[in-house]
Figure (spheres, rainbow, N blue to C red):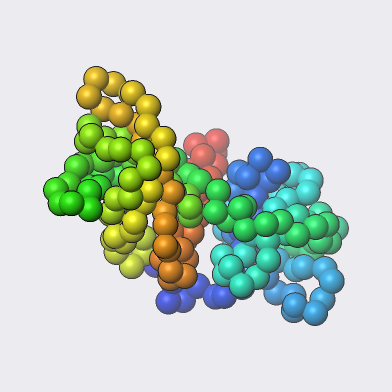
Length: 206
């Protein structure tokens, strides 16, 4: 089973980010909504890194729960208790991005397709390389193949285009008209990639 298994992942899953939005750990919220302090059981990542980070961003995967800046006040093994400092906006979830390297395709609305290579992915958009002649401001369809339930075909509005190497350009765009399930799958894919990256970096350090 992968780190993110959407059929089994509990609704109280969250991630903890430092002040620069680097992911520290994944956990499960064990406290109730009526409690002032928030208890999180660490399930992946580094509880010690959370302890050393100072104020951290608590980001529930389920967007029905708010994102918050919190301060650690007690650590009991893998169980961390936080005092909420302030609420954060949805931009934290939308803008958290992860470098990714996968091949896919982008489709103009009038037909045809162009291959692309991803640079990074967030819940709000994607940056990618392509030799396709694409137009800033236009809406295209793009295939995101890295989610737990298979490829997603999403609408994307191109925001920026920069020359990169010969005929290849670096493009950046935002997803438009996402439904809740699509946004959840994107968020899971981004967080899974970051957690795997943290685990690999920790393994390298021994």
